[in-house]
Length: 78
Image 1 (cartoon, rainbow, N blue to C red):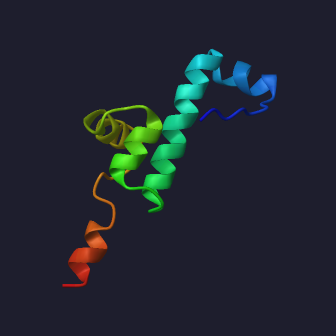
Image 2 (cartoon, rainbow, N blue to C red):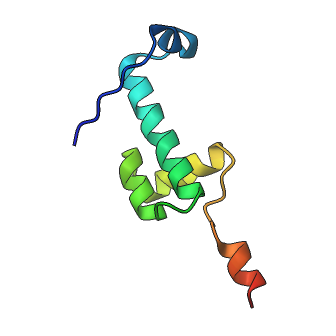
C-alpha cells in the first residue's frame, strides 16, 4: 500500500533529510510509537518500519524504548 502525505517544505529543510530519508524515518517512528503504546506487536512494528526484527530492536534501544513492552505489568501481576 502507498500512503501520501502533504508536509510543509520547512519540515524537510528543518530536519535536513532527503524525502527518501524522511519517509524511512517517519515509518520507523510510527512503528516505534505504535509498538510502544501496544497497538502493534514487535513483529508487525518491525514489518511496518521496513526492518528485520533484530534491527528494529536495536532501533528501539536507540530511541529509548524498551523492547520488553508489557513485561513489567506481567511480572507485577504474579
